[in-house]
Amino acid sequence: MEQFYPLLVYVVVLVGFVATNLILAYIAGPRKRTSVKEMPYESGMDPVGDARQPFDVKFYIVAILFLVFDVELLFLYPWAVSAYIGTDGIPAALRGTVFAVMLVFMATLVIAYIYAWRKGVFRWR
Image (tube, rainbow, N blue to C red; front, side, top):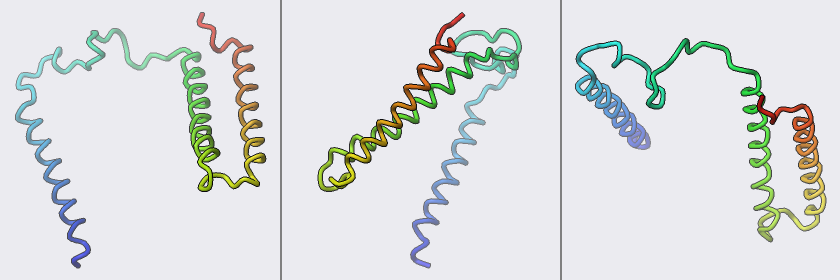
């Protein structure tokens, strides 16, 4: 049972933190409910129109491309670090193979980038 004391202390601190935040939000919260106070905060600008209006497809395409190239970096950084660490990184016998695999990976992404460029994804109308 002694091994669970840190977990019990953590749960008590967590519940206390949540309860304290809820009580402080109730005490410090707005008293008079007006339409201006209940309006959503939009970076200092008054919201105009309905929030559920459809977005243009180009925003989604740019977001997907950002995720693709962001994931590329998630694979590229660990490889670059492990390739040049020395004894703890990639074994010397496999460095050429891993480098070739990374070149194929990068070539695939370059092809995808060129395809998106040719299709006009990066051109704002």
